Length: 247
Image 1: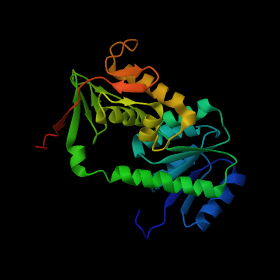
Image 2: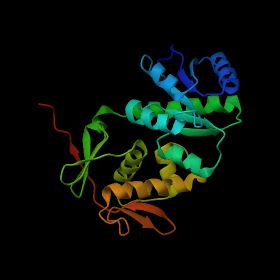
Image 3: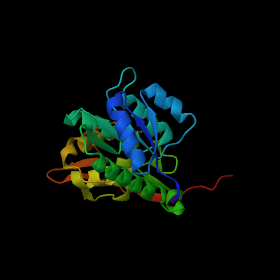
Image 4: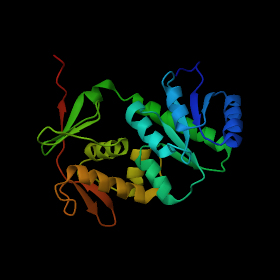
């Protein structure tokens, strides 16, 4: 995407009475919009296109939006905004844990959605513009290693431990600030790119998931410790080493 190229949006929603007017509105705002009425249709579109962002409904017949979101963030690393009538906090938390970048509850004001799209894309651009030499570092702690470029976590035996996008972001936040107490608002702002007071439980759930990956005893965590009334602290020393040059 360049300054002369319109932002490409994939709009996935099975309800034409919402999808079609929204596509028309976004087109009028200068976006290049591709519509898909289902997750399979969206997957088909993605075989020949790489949108800048995906607007995704959760409740769809067949494969739902949560499943498609998981696929998008794990295989395409595309920014995702959920558009859904489900306003329960649990649903929002699940969406954010899967790696969605934002969550808009229907009915919504289209101008607000446009603002959120631009915010998410600015945040994604900042992440993409990380200096190359920063990605040449490897994080190491107590025999563990995190490769930010490959988003690969290895245990002390060298075995790869699968982590989600959200878990990677959270672990990276801790490793960048070892032994510093981070409260939930700070972690939400770091991981999601915005302060979201409604989603404190999202941080707690992500921490619990991450602990299950890196802690020998989650009831007595060695690395990610809870600070009563404060938040969380990564309690191990973290060392950065230079990535070996390819042979």
